[in-house]
Each structure stands twice: as C-alpha cells, then as structure tokens.
Image 1 (cartoon, rainbow, N blue to C red):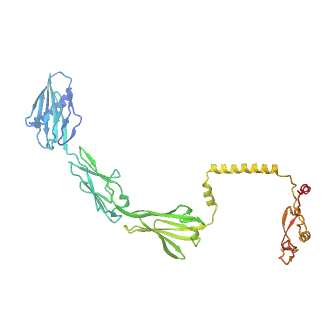
Image 2 (cartoon, rainbow, N blue to C red):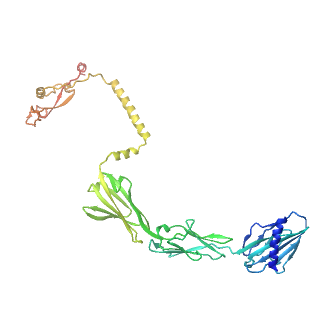
Image 3 (tube, helix red, strand yellow):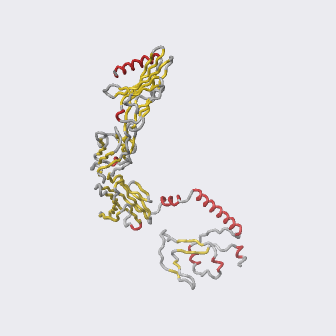
Length: 450
C-alpha cells in the first residue's frame, strides 16, 4: 500500500506541477544531530481555487515500505498514535518538526500535498535525513616519542577521537593536506600516518582533522623529532676580505671566525690548524678568534669540523688566512666610518681656515726680496770652511744648500781626511758635504741691525 501511495504521489506531483501546484524544499538532504530537534521546511503554492488542502508525511528506510507519520486537512492534524509526540506540523504550513532526533529517525521523509477545488491536484517532495553525533577534539600520538634519525628511523602518527559518528580523518602538514607518497602511507581509515624513512623535509607542524556531516575538529599541532645533519657547513668572519676559501687580514687585526651548519641536535665544533705539514686541534666551539700578529706564517691553513653525535655524521670545511699590510682596502673601510656630508664639511672648513691664515701672514709679514740660489766653485767652499764664520751672527742668516763634490772621473770620493776644526767649530770632511751661507740678510734689514 505504501509503495502504491508513493508512486501515486510521484505521478500526482508531475501532474500537479503542470496544473499549477508546486511543492519545494530548500535541500533534499538534511543533516541532523542526535538528541536535538530537526526542522524540515516545505513550501507549496497553487493558482486555482481550493476548498480543501491536505498534507501527508511519510517515512521510509532503505528496503522498507513507507510509513504514515501524520497528516492534516486544512487546519486539522491527524497523527499516527505511535509518533504523535515526536512529529509536529502546524497547518496550513506543511513543514515538519522532529524532536528529539534519534539514529532510528534516519531515512527518507516524503511530503505530499493535495488540493481539492474544481479537481484534485497533487505534488510531493522527498528529503533525506542523516543523524550523527558531533566529533570531539582529536589527540595525536607519535611513535617513537623520542624521535627518529634521518634515513634510518620511522615515525607513526595516530589520531585518537573519543566521540563522533561517521568520522573522516585528514592529515595536515603546515595547514596543507598530506598525500600518499613513496615515504607516506595511511591506515585503512586514515586514522594513522606512517612515514618511513624520515628525512629532514618531513619536519613540520602536523595536525589531524576529524569531521562528519554535522561537525569538524582539529587537533593541536605536533612536531615530530627528526635528527639530521650537519648540512651546509660554512665559515664567516666579522672582518677581513673573503675570496672563496681565503681570508685576507691586515697585520695587527684580530679576526673572529664563526662556524655554522644546519643540524639537529646542534653540532659540536672543532678548529684545526695546519702548520709545517702537521695538524692539531686549537679550540672547541663554534667561534675562533685569531690575532694576526701572533701568526708565525703569512699564510696559514685552518679547518672547521662539525659533528652530530646523534646521527653520527660529520662535515669539515677548509680555509686559508693570508696576512697582509694595511692597504687601500683598510683605508677605504676607515673612510666609510665618516659620512660624505661630514667629510665635505671638514675639508671645506680646513680650506677656509688655511686661506685666512695665509692672507693674515702675508698682510703682517715684512717685505723681503726673493733670495737667489747660487752655486760656488768647490775652491770657494773649501776656503770658506777655513773661517769660523761666527764673528757676526747676522752673517749666518740666509739660505743653505747641500753640495756633493764628485771626482773628475765622475765617481764620488770617499772620505780621505778631515780638516782640523778651529775652536768651537766641528770637524768636517771636505770630500763629503758642505753647508754654506750663500745669501745674507737683505740690505734693508742690514741697515737696521736691531
């Protein structure tokens, strides 16, 4: 009987749609939460006069016959006594209220509207209802909790959820879905993620997203512990010129080297120096300070070694220090400490002050004739040296010149003898150099000896 009613309702709906009666529902699938009320909205309309309006609600489960729930004629409701306290309808509104919703209420709900006027018009709609429990917040467990070594160990992430029906699991890494790959695999329902073997690229923020038709919850982020490295070992310095693996340092400078590599846990570092084909450890730790003045050789080879005591891997890098003198590079670095504006200002002030001092000196300096440098024969220089030249101190004022006397052959003569000096006059070699007064005080100053 129920099947016949459903078939007749479907045919009536087709005929009613053509004759002007329309029944509409917002969605053909409605998801409900167990223990809460569920409202199934229905709208209908027609354009012909109607004396009676009848609404009927039927319920069916898969592979079962539809069952009558309740119906109405105009404003009178006729419920099924078995369901009279569970289903409610307020005619002429055809919508249905289910309260409370249980798992047994899951199935298809059929609404049929009949209009009695000049004739009978019928139309119907079907709504599928699902019932679920909302999921609770999941918790992620990781094994082994102590972590795994890169390319050696494996990690399994398991998502645990206490509540929720028809749960769907999804794994996220840094907020993006994790897909199956050569190293990633999932359990049957995706509740577990297995990574084998782990690599450095597997490090990230993992979370488990659990959802169903009525809810979704995401776990807290968990970061698996993966031991790796060292990778990218390099040496940097706070000063000096670096070209490839060579550091150029000026004499007197102290240079600080820093050795670093990507690794977990952090590496242990050792500094090794090579001298005279022999190597020895000079320091432990990531930093090394070298004083250039204490290096015996101008070119010295060094090596930084990094070791990860968990992965058992090590790496090393070589570099050379060359000691040089202060050059243009150091002067350029010092010049950079001053701003261009400060440099221009200082130079301008220096030029202005120098010009002012020069003008003042010329203004107040007494006039003097420009002396003329004269060269005397060697005999006159030797003769002049036989006198003390200190009878009058004014005679000693003038311009002095440096003279060297070569032999006739053009070869400078070596000192052969010294002329005895008079009292108060030092002994001088006549064959080396002679200092002589060749220009005296100008005439205008001799006229005024004071």
